[in-house]
Image 1: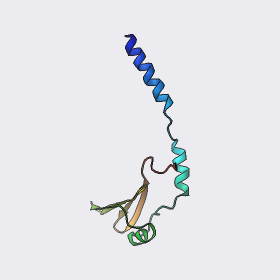
Image 2 (image 1 turned 45 degrees about the vertical axis):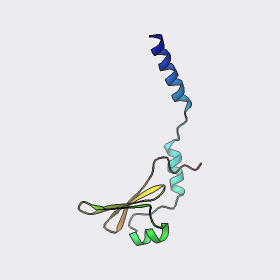
Image 3 (image 1 turned 90 degrees about the horizontal axis):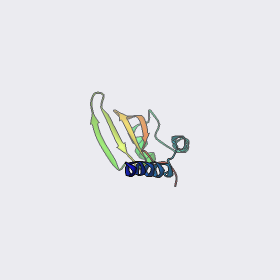
Image 4 (image 1 turned 60 degrees about the vertical axis):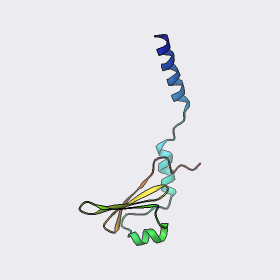
Length: 94
């Protein structure tokens, strides 16, 4: 029983030592980033941000496709940007 309590206490200690980045920090940094905006076309995005690392084909009706960049993904309906999603942990400046 003592070993279980000791293991539990060590787990709590190690968990409290690790630092987590607050989401508010990511939101603040995202506000300073140049990201694709809703309503822009695929050609505008590729001209401004370059070729994505991955282009996923459209699925569903209406057709939704996505492009993956290093720190974010862009989702399209037909040819227009629906929204841009930041990848978890990829936006905090080191």
